[in-house]
Image 1 (cartoon, helix red, strand yellow):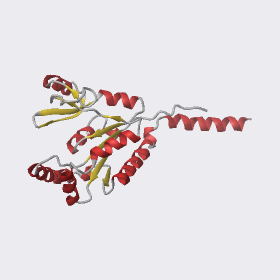
Image 2 (cartoon, helix red, strand yellow; image 1 turned 135 degrees about the horizontal axis):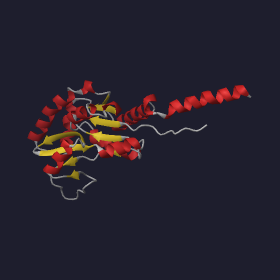
Image 3 (tube, helix red, strand yellow; image 1 turned 30 degrees about the vertical axis):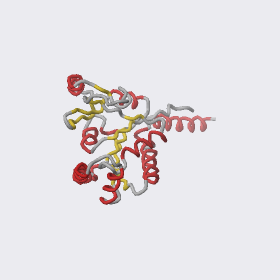
Image 4 (cartoon, helix red, strand yellow; image 1 turned 120 degrees about the vertical axis):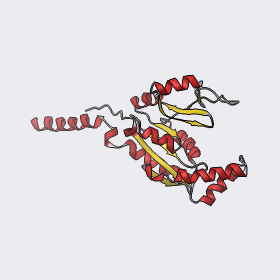
Length: 218
């Protein structure tokens, strides 16, 4: 007895306030899970030195971007500091058809739009919390990239982001990056095994019943 064991792909959303570890966890997950596809965002901002179209971002003109939005080609989109960003749907549809999962590194607003989209039933959402606000500020300062004013702004914004935690399927407190990564991979493994994501099971069980019936006839 054989069965097509291909499962349906899922959409894994990671969100967190800046400094809580979302981007680090995303990068680690992509290394550990080679079948996982990362959703490359489209943007209207110009490329920075070293950035490659299609790898770092999908660079589009404002007119091209708006045409994609109007055509329903974006799962989510937003304007940030005068530029548009969004998640194209076509690569996600292809991955799902192939039984592959897609990882989204987005804020709560992007996550909300994806959950409200036509693919919302396939979403698994995870929110990453810092162990404390003091630790969050320490991590932001440890980057040595931003001024005190910018850090203060990020800390203020983080309170609003953290208030959305209850909208997510899973919430992890990132006290230790290795432990949090392990927990995240456990979530992914369990969600991949959900009955509804394995359409081959119905035929497989029918085969078991047929096999038993054939045995009784002998």
